[in-house]
Image (cartoon, rainbow, N blue to C red; front, top):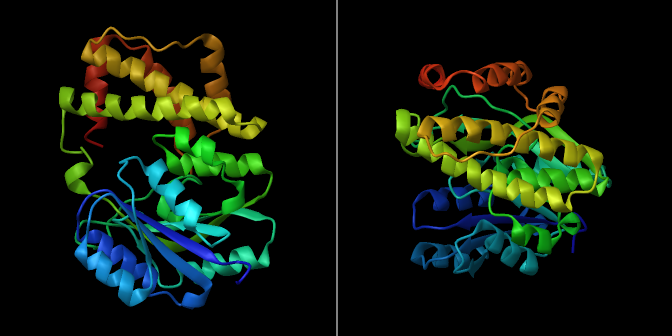
Length: 307
């Protein structure tokens, strides 16, 4: 088998029409099918995907567990590729995505992590004016060497899988390529983005999300090894605790997340790796907001929802 064979992993957790388009985008690649396989992981039965399985020789797994980690682990165990490319059920690959990934890994044997830029699209598939870029954003933009993944660690993660794959790549000591090429379509769902929510409803959903993120990051921090990965994880953990303390105050929940001056100084000393050049100055704005009296903080949060 080709030494740089790619396994494309597409998980889906509920019946939907978008997953068919995702699979088709993985099938319609400029790279020949003898260089990659497609593994679809479901927790439901789907007649159309079963037909695609027979027609296009894709692999279909059924995993009852709803967690993404279980789906990834099941796919890893049957995959033949030494390179993994992830594709969320609602995203799409450009037609040259896998060829570009294949050549990147083939030309650099030390490469362990590849990340490309993405075009934002709406529910109808039309391009929208959104921009965000960081080396761990969007699983569908990530390809990784399989042999650096520790399945035991992956099984303990329950959110932020893109961040997990980036951190373990840093830990591996291999090379990382952050490509400026647009090779993925990232679907931004207006109906589920919570941008239309205001006040308490918005704060509750943010708090639930950030709590899941915090739990996963604290789990990751326990097994990360290198100075850089631990520094970035700690930076993220502190950011979430600052946000959660503010949300706790806004919701009057009475819960406090431990932060000391050393945490805050560490946080302010880490120049963010996020692609947005305004992200680092934004830390100082957050510290100012964090110290505001509650009634003013509510006004700031309402204002931030409008910009």
